Image (tube, rainbow, N blue to C red; front, side, top):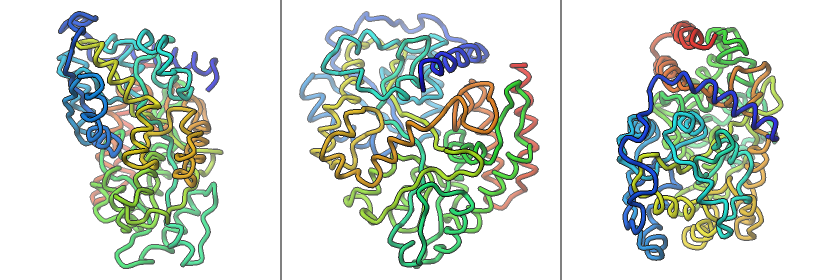
Length: 453
């Protein structure tokens, strides 16, 4: 995004975040820099994705050995992490020095005064090179021209497919497929190998689980959660068509146990050869191409996020590190955050674990590392282009009241998206209809919209 779009996004989130139902208790639990000097231990809570498992493995012999700062990690599944972190930060309980958060939470929490600004830690640190961070990531983690989180890795979304399976079946995947083309291929490769299904799509409830991919489908089918003037659209024809398409595809040709399959379950299914395709985060490619954890490394093809009525549909996200205002170990926490998002850390991952596993998508320089370019030859360029093409301000065919590709940038969306996803997950499991689920969702969305009209 350009600077004008950045100002629009910031103003939109700033105005809407005022509706947050939880209220920050300024100064609760302390804060500031008191007690930070000489800290030798910090607490970090993070999502249980492969990149986070890697940093836990590497920390003691690198960061701790160099700085003397010990890191106590808590790793949780995505939905559990979000509940735990939101509760801790919003109530200012002060249990953690560093938390895993994303582009949805940061501007809202920063506006509420729950996070420490980070500019003073990175601006004058030439070794860190903040100017090397990709602009879309910086913008998504900023509020009122201040940076409140550092990106660990960035991502968009794309289609991953077994190029060897498609070739054997005489099929070709376009570089920019439509969803109709994807559904056609899914039907043809379903059963191509023993126990193989056509595609994996998230069915696990959660605004950031199922509705991350599903909202991109809604967008490109011409739907939206809300119109520009805050009219709820959850039961609109376009929204309904998109959800019916998604549910039908996963029920006919999707993974076993789809109603309980999230990112991790789909990653495992794809890595183990149980599905021929998967639409999800670009960051998954590093694991798929690592032969130490994937049985299909070297046999994966990549295509841009499928579309229908839009030119592109990939989401924009970054799992990042933020520092709650309550931390008593700000200096040590900042040292960890800078190390974990540095080019130095990328080198450590590449040299010790393999270059495909580098937590990329956040630094321009990553894409000029010869070893990474070779390891990410099939997915690196398309990842970077997908990130650059993602448009959080205009992700669909109509104007939006706020920002976000795969989410709506208001505090209430976490609850709204999760509740609607629970009903759709039940439909995937065989209980109820999409129309009934979306009728209930429309009523919930109208209650939210009434707060903004």
